[in-house]
Image (cartoon, rainbow, N blue to C red):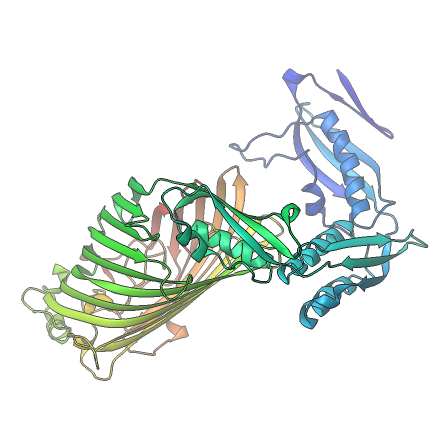
Length: 624
């Protein structure tokens, strides 16, 4: 048996085959630093208490190291006198678990009295003022050494971005006097540098020309660390290489020229993939795709994909030409034959599109590519044959509406040709597309059909969407989304807007209290007709439960209106509910149970009046 002792406290720790679980862990006396932040520094953790959670056991050696780690953490953040005053370890009645309380005496902090910065004159005034301002803003606060080290790294990166990769930044501090510290920063920028010889290694079938045109610098350009980083990202984005490293060779520098080495490892250029999945809306889903990167050289990409599910099925061929008018612009061609079986209609499409895309990535303060902006212009030409659900044909009051929509009132079938031009904008600061936890996404869409374009339809569409993600307390994620759109025409005829372009809400990624396409204006008999204006909002709180399992609470709101540019907040539909997310390498497996807070009167589902005011959705990926 082991005896664990603190002043006036003792508890027996059992042998290894009778380990004590940590039921709870608290830190008392923490005022300057959040308790949750301190707990994150400890190896000793308390279990969640849930039946399926992984138990956390008490280890004496690990706990002793944790106590020392807490004192060191305080010292690094300006509290050199902080001490663990005592701790309590309370054994449960069944002697199978312990509750731990650590009592901290923070002591007096060492406060930053003054700062001095010399040698940043080589930087532009804006950069210099920002860096010096960040440091001076900490005067009067506890001296945080890790934060000062991070600031020093930021200064060196800024100097490297402006042509001084060999700069040296030294930081000195005086001895604390009456708990006050003065900091001095001396910068030796060295001579300005340029890019020297560029050596490319490891490429076999991909030409040096493709690699060099993807670089954001040329020999003789002023040296920039940001350009090095952008170049590495561009090479990865070509999807030709499984490994890319763009590095500077300072030790081989001759005068002001800094050699750069690009090391590559190519991956397979022909790829055949098969995927299967299941969702409550798509049911069983099967997909197959073939891609050839570096198609006929030049980093071109060609591909064919096919899909089958209860919602849609078909085949699509694509071709992408990178480096059109520059490294940031690409041209994409696609053609498809696709069939969609939606709850409100069936749609058979044959056609294609031409898209020109400009993409720009910018570096964040931490040095990673935190902001990506994409602008795409498209021309679309499609032939469609579509049919409304058979229930609509039995509703005689809907006959005039069918004719106005351009559908045969006897068969519910319509045909047409659509030619449109579209402009899409996207700006994202999130680093994880499958499970965003920080940042925002802005999306805009403009589309026009008719007027000076041939085809059977004449409309303009405006759509906008914003998403915001924020991690709070280091563990919970708040996700918010707002989306609005409208379809406008210059006449009263409903045939100006094809039925399949109308707006519907409801489903696993929309108003989750309803099934797919169940929220929209209704016919006299209660059938969903779709509308010309849409407004939707959602909020989720995502919290970890244990391991790969997360829990979610959400609220959705939204509606669809018949007229263009009509948004009535007083008539929004609401739902709320809980959900679960199980994290996998391909994204979270999601289950959401949503309850309607504002049911829709007269709504028909599968030809019957709706009586079930809740929905369960299962799919892969976050709702947004």
